[in-house]
Length: 197
Image (tube, rainbow, N blue to C red):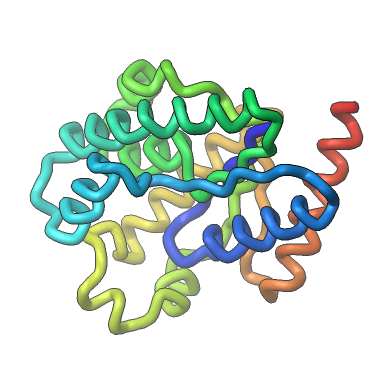
């Protein structure tokens, strides 16, 4: 099973991905916790690029897709070994962020057509202003060019639109406490796993 955690920066994806992986391991599942950008060469290049905002959106989208092609191989190997894969960001981040940057959604889907759909997408939904206050002023001043309220609201709207068109996409209210969000995610994952038996 491939579970992707998605949402705008500051929505709590990384925290919730770790908590979900720990919960699954506690129930006896083998878990492969991963994320995008990856720790590979292309992923490291992407992190540098994101800090400097030096690429055009289409070039950036292609770099994300290149990194993702490596990531998909890692995911497929983990799934083949019987692990549950929990990923902190996946292809849906490209759809949301790059489409909000003005890139055509059909083109984005075509460029990422090699990436299999996740069995379950948990989209942590949070207003942009609240997400930015969580990120903190220091990080915002030296952060990525994506970390602007108007842009993040656009990204949020794309995520919500993606959720409307997919049975595997579940929107989770991320404005609550870490514990409440985790409990909600656990309930949803347990329900999906039981339904899939």
